[in-house]
Every structure is written in structure tokens, then in C-alpha cells.
Image (cartoon, rainbow, N blue to C red):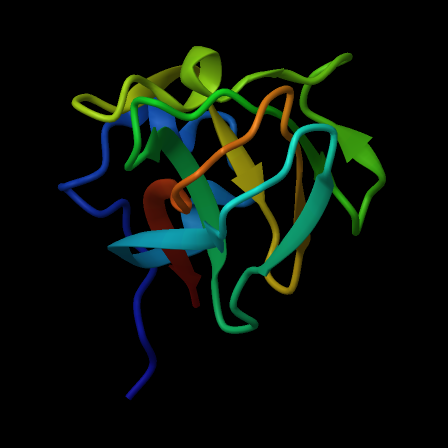
Length: 143
């Protein structure tokens, strides 16, 4: 039996309007990708890479940090396309929220399946405790 294409009723229209081939979306699923960083010394740069899954695209709608005392800066880049998501590194609390509430992106970020996302973190002072940066959104399955 063939799967019929339809627009999932749980996905707001503004999510789908910028997604390529939105008519072929058959299922969505909430999902989060997290990257764990340990304690950092001042001036140390750490690069973590998040690999999106091969069976679905990913639409990121919010970013969150689990530690409000994190002082480093972060630069996010899509390694697959080479596209940076900001022109300079910004403080983690500016883009990942305060730890109590996530930062909701004004426009969702779309990542194709099998995309490598680089989180480049630089500590401006000693970060004594580890922290986690999380990208939350929807996995998009197509027919």
C-alpha cells in the first residue's frame, strides 16, 4: 500500500512554508540534538559536531543551555554546506537562553538529512562546570 502525502495537522503552516518539497512530508516527530562540553580553561576552544540523522531532515526551532553561569561564546556552522549561522561568535546566553527558558529562533533553521553542525565554543574565562547545548525542533520524514 502506498503512503499518501499530506500536511501533518500538528505542524504549523509557517514551519512548512520554507521547507523544500513540503508536500511530501508524511510525518513529523519532536526531537533534540545535544552537545556536551566539559569544564574549560580560559581561552580554550572546543569544537563539537552534531550529525543529523540520515532518515529525516531536521527543523530547529529553539536552542537551550542547561547552565546559566556559562560565559563562553559560540559560533554555529553547517559543515555540509559551509554556511555559518552568525557572522561572529556570540555569548552562549545570547543564543541558547538563560538555562531557565530556551531561546526560540525568530525563523526556524532547516537542516537536510546527514548534515554536520559544528558548535565552536571559546571560553573567555574559566568554566568550572560542564554544560550542554541543545537544539530542539522537529524531524521531518518524507514519502
